[in-house]
Length: 146
Length: 290
Ligand SMILES: Cc1cc2nc3c(=O)[nH]c(=O)nc-3n(C[C@H](O)[C@H](O)[C@H](O)COP(=O)(O)OP(=O)(O)OC[C@H]3O[C@@H](n4cnc5c(N)ncnc54)[C@H](O)[C@@H]3O)c2cc1C
Ligand code: FES
Image (cartoon, rainbow over all chains, first blue to last red):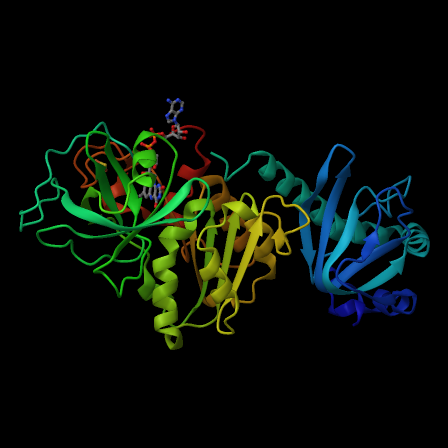
């Protein structure tokens, strides 16, 4: 697994990826493992290469609900970029899942120290946010409801 | 869509198959798909059976004393002797159809409409996207694609429903998912922990499909908002709007292009559709009210 092979980084300056690659950590999760837990420190940027991850909302008065699943080529989220850097959801592997993960504080420092790269990075991340907002809106419309 | 019961009495012995007169069909089998959806298998009770159908065509199903509704044919085009329809209870007529017991009789006239342009799919990658009860009108396409598998490139199917309990053809989907010459993805809007499939809208699965956009043809069927956003997602992948087809639902009465009930701009959905090239109807999918 290489950063350059992930859809998120398609077209990214290879030089930047060369600098970031040594920071990345390869991880593997078994079905049922939690990748991140709501309220826990959002300390890494997670790129999914293979498998399936369920984003779950947990509320005390109702059963846990999966609101979206993510697969290979997708990224987990942006909580690591925005203060207070805490995860807003649980993310659980539904089947064996392989990821590359970048440490959040190093990544934030890198993006801040080079605003041009930071800007381009945000332009990559923003569609992920926008797309998830659009899905949420469509889900709210209850498309398949009666 | 439903009428107030326009057609006259069943004309069992009509041999000319007048478009106005339903032919009596017997309900041979009633299979519950979900809590509100059933699949009916019908055979001619007497008289001449209807003409064979093309994938994407629909029949008008008539319930005595209740009325008539347009229902897509969802069976295998190679087995025309068994007429298969999948119906969800949405109102009076559909409710009467889903409640039709084996042995009872319904009136059928059709088949009507243009159908999916399967000939355009030959030699190309094919994407089928179904939302909710959009799968039944696409199932005949899938039967045909798989029957002549060698004629087509990659086949990607994305099927979305509200919850796992709302998925129709559950067993058959397991079979399709087990095939190596087809990728069949199911996704639901929300699920509990007992669901191991995908959660999210069908549009979310589009970036992941493995096709060559320039040689892809896509057939979409489901709620219009879903088709609109799916078409946009396909366009973002590089599929052109003239290679995307959508199936539209409009109120129907005569089903033969005479009454104007189903008019959409210059077209009649019953006669010129229900399948249209997205390029030709995309403006209607953005109109606030029709
Ligand atoms: C080309 C085409 C293909 C189709 N294919 C299929 C198919 O394969 N399967 C299928 O199930 N349907 C299909 N339909 C839809 C079908 O024709 C009917 O529109 C649908 O079954 C509802 O008809 P109905 O008369 O039972 O409901 P209607 O009485 O027309 O009700 C329709 C809507 O009104 C609401 N409603 C009904 N009664 C009331 C009330 N008293 N108060 C408030 N709201 C009410 C219902 O909840 C529903 O949302 C197709 C339609 C078209 C045009
Ligand atoms: S239903 Fe009468 S013209 Fe289409």
